[in-house]
Amino acid sequence: MNEKLSQFEVKMGKTYENLVGEYGAIRAGRANPKILDRLRVDYYGTPTPVQQVGNVSVPEPRMIVIQPWDKSLLKALEKAILTSDIGINPSNDGTCIRLVFPELTEERRKELVKDVKKKGEAAKVATRNIRRDGNDYLKKLGKTEDISEDEIKDLEDELQKLTDKAIKNIDKLIEEKSSEIMTV
Image 1 (cartoon, rainbow, N blue to C red):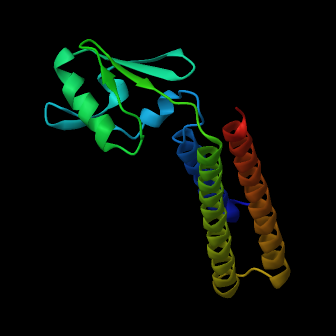
Image 2 (image 1 turned 180 degrees about the vertical axis):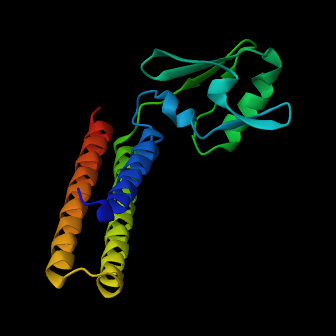
């Protein structure tokens, strides 16, 4: 790999990783503790990730149990879950909070697949923007440094191959997540 293109390969990799993270937060009918990753609870005045204030477990395929180490956090946890975009009502039994995931309807599954495709498309656009930035960089490089047009053309071809590979990976991820959501 050419060192002139490595920065763009890294950016494309970060775009892919970001998409993986976003897909992890989309619930697909079964309980996945990753949907709590973005959730912050007010812990003595500090927004703290849920995983840092208690045990998060998945005792059943469609249930997450959050057992805070400090029982006084139950109300704050409940409030954080209710105000989030998770869309699940927590049940508080005085010692822990249970999140029961209802079975997804066919309609809701199709909405989620649309959302998955929309996020995937946004990642592809971001990847293409990185390619455009890379091509601009190579054009400037051709004017400022002593590099032949053939070398610039070769670098542009290599950048295109990187882009094609990144988009192929994104398409594969979209397909996997869509089939996971549509599987009952």
